[in-house]
Structure formats: C-alpha cells, structure tokens
Length: 54
Image 1 (cartoon, rainbow, N blue to C red):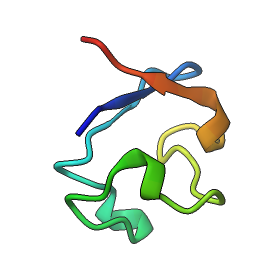
Image 2: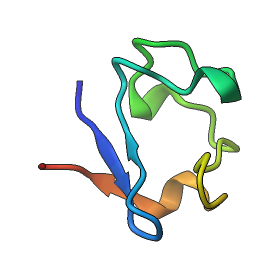
Image 3: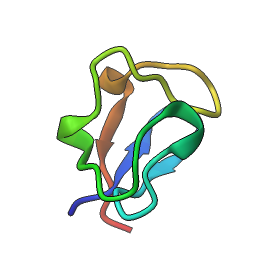
C-alpha cells in the first residue's frame, strides 16, 4: 500500500501503521480513511496529502 505525505508539515501516513490515535486501524489504505480525517500533527484534511515516494 502506498504512503502519503502531508504537504504542510511532512507527516507521512503509513498504511501499515494506520493512525490508531484517530481510530484508523493498521492496514487501512489512505483511500479508505474517512474524508473527515485530519493530519494528526497539523490538522489539515486529506486534500493536503500527496503520494509519498521517499
């Protein structure tokens, strides 16, 4: 599964880890995260993430 990076704060969403503090289980693809999810570091929405190639 592809990782995504926040263009504002550079937080990387890794689907293998998920975001348990926000209720996103490990193994959840970025595309399957609810649209109201926000970056756990800076609070921007999914629209401010792009595929991470690093």
